[in-house]
Length: 206
Image (cartoon, rainbow, N blue to C red; front, side, top):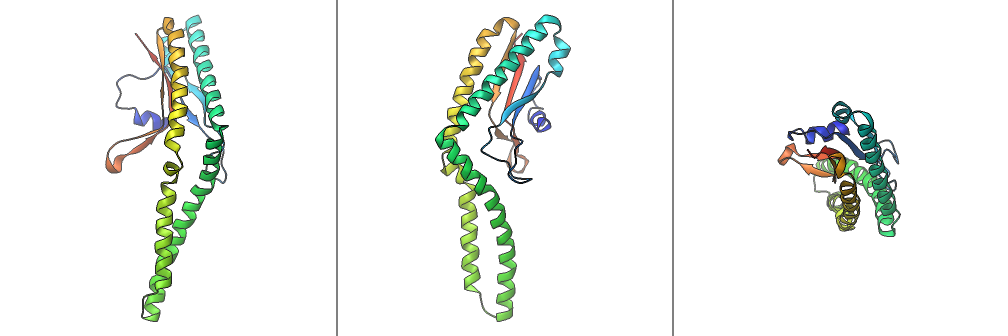
């Protein structure tokens, strides 16, 4: 959410005039998001823009930035209609819940295997093989999105978005502002890593 984004950008001296995060609020079940729905830039925070600029210039910049977010949202929707992305998203809707189910099964199988082995006074190889199979299946599914080409699809979408942002910055240079799009990323070292959501921000160029 916005708090996570601000936390990930707390080390930056400047703060954006406006910011918004790409969100997908649709869920298959309560916890699992529906990957077939494209994330959208909504709920723009104009707090700093309101403090620094007022009058017609404020209205013009706000209108232009909202127009930019709508254009980017359209590019995301187009991407999600492509066949390879649609297939990938359907797979992810199955994989994410399956990983959780397999993890729960693994936590049940391990103590069960130990108990049966202790009662029978011999190693239960049948359960042992099942545990190993489930373990490697979890590892495979964990990295599945990379195996299914998510990097190529993300690069394709980000290239389109950057093109839209670049054109917008040229058109709106006279207002003394520029926009920045940042894809979702991980920041930090070791255990202190945190996921920074995809963001669209507006900055003062002066």
